[in-house]
Amino acid sequence: MKRIYDLLVIGGGPGGYTAALYAARAGLSVAVLEKLSAGGQMALTDTVDNYPGFPEGIDGFSLGENMQLQAERFGAVTELAEVLDMDLSGKEKAVHTSEGTFWGKTVVISTGASPRKLGLPNEEFYTGKGLHYCAACDGMRYKGKTVAVLGGGDSAVADALALARIAEKVIIVHRRDTLRATKVYHQTLEEASNVTFLWNSEVTELLGQGKLSGIKLKHVQTGEETELSVDGVFVSIGREPSSGLVKNYLELDERGYIVAGENTATSLPGVYAVGDVRTKKLRQIVTAVADGAYAAYAAEEYIAQV
Ligand code: NAP
Image (cartoon, rainbow, N blue to C red; front, side):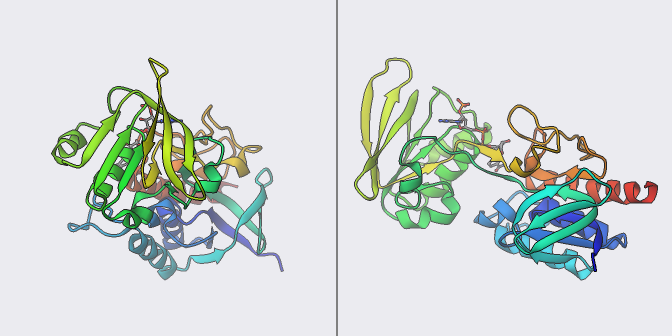
């Protein structure tokens, strides 16, 4: 028999599991559809230091697992399933997955965002062979070695500082002559004696034979080309929303984020977007969980009205 959940949550990150927690506590039936494991991108974070309640910090994987357990304590279920397609237009919303079709009266999209790629030939080939997108996950491979970090935002700086504790030398390569990262990071960076900068530089080629051993750089003002030998490269140039599956149903902004405000309402009634996948200024765990709470509240109101 076809089971229709009050709420289907797509993506088990902090926003998704908070929506599940609040909805389950309000007595709604809830299923969270998750491809891999709880926590989303957060699960790849070594230490989360800016989520309140953990004075010593907490690793992202444990925090994700805890959020899952907390939602499940109130009756939410987790289905390990990869979402392949969906039909959100009707009153009963269908989500087609690798494990069959799930139905929901309301749907919360919390699919997050993933690292932006450089868009260079051979990028896929070198991924994991000297080219990485997660310093917390792969940094330990470069103990005593030389690495480059690409980017100039908070992520790049946080990655560079984490890598500076492991690698012998860290070179931040940025296409501008100044960092975009918040000021709080600047002094810490200056104090890290093994971090240097290459300004106004763009990576034009990944070099190596079988494994990455360097990068070709172009000076953005002079056009001069140079080569830099490194043992590893960490790409930290921002993220892209995972919104491809809903692009035919929901309004997206020009960068692909689902258009939704603080009330998490999307362009379709009964469908809510939470966390990194929606339009917002500050993409953090605390803002994602706040979204989750609101989405559950909105879903409850919607169900009471239809
Ligand atoms: P971001 O702020 O968008 O910065 C991306 C950086 O990568 C920019 O410096 C950008 O250069 C550069 N970039 C983008 N595309 C590039 C390309 N194709 N080639 C070379 N460089 C490229 O992204 P983010 O650092 O990932 O941060 C995202 C959000 O998460 C921000 O709101 C940030 O504050 C937050 N965050 C917070 C923390 C924390 O600890 N509180 C840690 C990490 C991230 P331009 O400057 O020239 O555009």
